[in-house]
Length: 593
Image 1 (tube, one colour):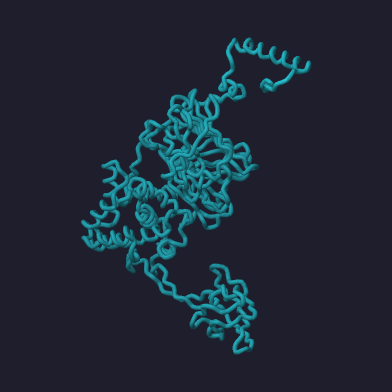
Image 2 (tube, one colour; image 1 turned 180 degrees about the horizontal axis):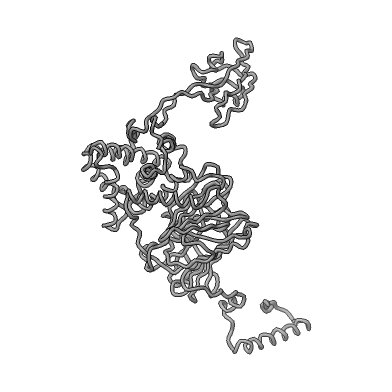
């Protein structure tokens, strides 16, 4: 009840006012007796309506509850016990895989046992969006609650997506996590963690899983950085163990057999270990960490897929009607390859920025090379991947990647070096030797980030100063193109030159949208030019059927365009098609492995 302040107006009081004043005095006189003689403070007044925080386990608790009816996932992050007092900031990736997490957050509330803790924006620089607490948490419990709206279907699969059947997301794209003030870095800050997923609102039979293990509840010890670099999901989950230290987690209803997929991924993992050795990952106090291969099968993805190396896992999103084919095996090998390239070692420039041509491009090269050497790829499948990544890599790289160009340039450069080292040593050595050496150097120094100069030194020792200068000019400074020789991949593969008919209108299609429509940029020698179309001619009318779909080899329907020539109308008909020479990687006869 809110008591109105006394009336301070002048003048005589009416009998009704006198009676009201007496009653008001009586109420005030009774208040001290109700509170043992003490007056209520503002904090106490707020506490009267404050719902107590539920008890939580010491450490950090993450609780995720999907609500497909509202198209959101409710998130709770609790820090309980001695760790709570250390929290000064909350952080989430400013942008990860093209996703700005804070734009998806709704109804954020931060509190402790005393009440709400307001937050203010922290430093603007750096990769994270930081919220600073305006006061330290009290009572040994900090609670952060909010909802995350599902991302649009066009967003990368790493973003939070939910529907009636499932939800999945990488922590970077939705988790607002505490920073432990006493830790030197986030990776040094280990904390007991309880991960709870509540899939009750999803389809019957749904359960949860994360990078740290399957099940609706998982206990682990992690850093906030590892929690951010983890996948969280719920839905129809199947788990296959690979003793002693790995498992396959499959979400959804894939078209492939899970046991076959696990066998393929295991072979890819072993093939990469044969190249690089054991991944230099520290063992947990109770023994080796279980590593998870996570496959998320979803409807409507077609031939597209998204994948990432994450904390104690890799995750791969793919269409639920797609077989576990060669491109998917290569994609899995690519993410596994990041345990070495990009994780165990990465090259950094003078500003400390990661050289993606090494971390990503070299991984493209080795994913394909290791699988082919182990017999997991046939020669035609190898050639198809060469064509996809080396010729059209800039077009087919995932849309969220930080630098599409670096994937292709790095893969070309790795193939170039590999072939050059093998030729110079008569097959005794390869690029593998240099990469293993830089990995060992990083492990010995306990410093994954190695300067590009360290790799240049190895390269100069192996192939001479000219190759070191080429590294600086072409890869570091980005000048020129990276080319590979015809025999860079051995005698099985060569560049085949073919001629193919493709759709070609013969002039700029925007010409049809100008007022008046006028033929612009007519291609010399095109079917349109040969049929009598003229540059600058006014178009009176046009009948242009829909072009064939991509990959459709059917002859396109003819077009009919009426133009004005010398003040007279003229009808021009032709088939919008031309021949184009294509150079593609192909397999030599007899190389069918």
